[in-house]
Every structure is written in C-alpha cells, then in structure tokens.
Amino acid sequence: MSHPTRAWSTRPETSADVTAIHAINSAAFERPAEADLVDALRADTSAWIDGLSFVTEAEDGTLVGYALFTRCHVDGHPALALAPCSVLPEFQGTGAGSAAIRAGLEAARALGENLVLVLGHADFYPRFGFTPASGFGVRAPFEVPDEAMMALSLDPSRATPRGTIRYPDAFGV
Image (cartoon, rainbow, N blue to C red; front, side, top):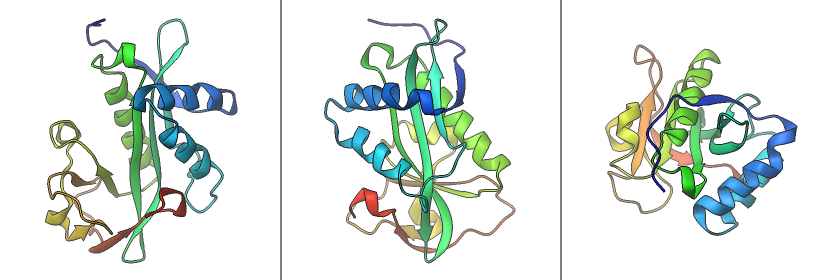
C-alpha cells in the first residue's frame, strides 16, 4: 500500500506510548530485537535522554513512526546514537520516519548536543546531512562498511571528538 508523502505530526514519547513503540519496532524489523533494545535503553539512565525519543502520529492519533537518540561516547566525549528508526510497514516510504528523525535532530540541537552517529543505509541518512563518520575521525567498535557508519555535526562551528564509538551496554557491542 503506497501513501503520498505528507506533513506528519511528531512529538516526544510519553509513558503511554511505550507499548505502541514496542509494536512499531517489532513490526518494522519483523523481530523483537530492536523493540527489546529500546526497552533496555529506556531503563539505562546513563543512555536515555528525556525528550529524544520521538514518535510520529497519523491524523487519527495512531503512532506509526519512531526515532530514538541515546547517549553514546566517542573517546570519552558525549555524542548521540540514532537507533533505531522505525515505521509500521504499511506507512514506510511516507516520510513518517524522516519526520521523527528531523524532530529528534532539532530537539538534540536545542539541548546543545552536537555529534550524532548512525549505522544505517547510505542512501537514506545523507538527506539529513549525515556523511561518513570516517570524515570526522570517528569509527565503530566493530567492522562496518565506511559508507554505513555516518555522523552529523548539529553545530559545525563546534569541534567534534575523534576516536572509537562506545555504545550503551544495551547495544551489546
């Protein structure tokens, strides 16, 4: 089922959204691993940042998309990891995921965050300004194709750390 791209409503998650967020991630990835990861990150006070877990709502209020930004570190300096980003299968390709990502990036910028990292599709994330993390001197703690490990500076006037990413324990890496 194809939907035209539309203007989506986004907002930070509330406690009432937890079950729907779990369902979105389980459906989008066709397995529970990412949904369980979000639950584990939510329980990790060193990783979770209130206000950086975004949902996308359909006109009827149904949650259809999701993007999460959590604390990670690069050479001991704070950064953000964007993971996961998910959309219910019947709404994929409609801009629902992009809307959640854009809202999360704006909220992160407003909080004074700078470096955002994502491991993902090289044909999707550059639309938000992500470029290979290697250009920032940042590398994943595991083998990954250069074009898949990406970074974005929310304030290019500020320096960004260089080194290896340390993800929250919930990522298992």
